[in-house]
Length: 127
Length: 134
Image (tube, rainbow over all chains, first blue to last red; front, side, top):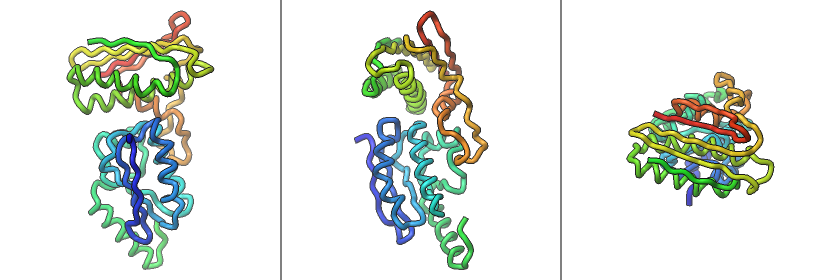
């Protein structure tokens, strides 16, 4: 299988989507379909764990953009973690993601999510 | 080292053609990183040609050749479809917010960034696209 998607609950507000394999012309329709349930669930944050994503092409980028738009249209966010260098390079060339949505490690991601939760608790709108 | 072959313009032909070329690059001893970038170049160009060169899938041919000399790779794609220069696609405005920019030209933009040179030429009734990567 060229692409495997596993969706789990990280916590009540966060869906974790593990993406394994390649995101290209052939597999991106499957990505759209498999990730849709995570995006339409009640969670305000969807995290894509890309530790085992070895390749992305423009077709894959389109799918990630679409997912990001869907999360943002409901006031949520799509975050990326563990992006591998060869995939990171493609994101950087096209300036695909705002820097504040890409995290090198789960530790960095956790720090950000903790920060956002505190912000929400303090009554401020997450940005 | 050179490899040359022809495929029909059908979407299902992409993967076997890609695998054949990537095996060739591996056999030529190119680095993992170079092969990954070559795959990206290949996918963006070949999928584009398969989709747009001819009106009907399966009615035309695409000739592919790849050569490796040291760490320099050359690729050539030829088809007899309508005159089509993929490089004329508008460069996406990368500074615009993603919501405000069309996604279309991203593939070609990636190719231009990763390759050392990309040229298009109409020769007789053929589209000839040549790529070099150092």
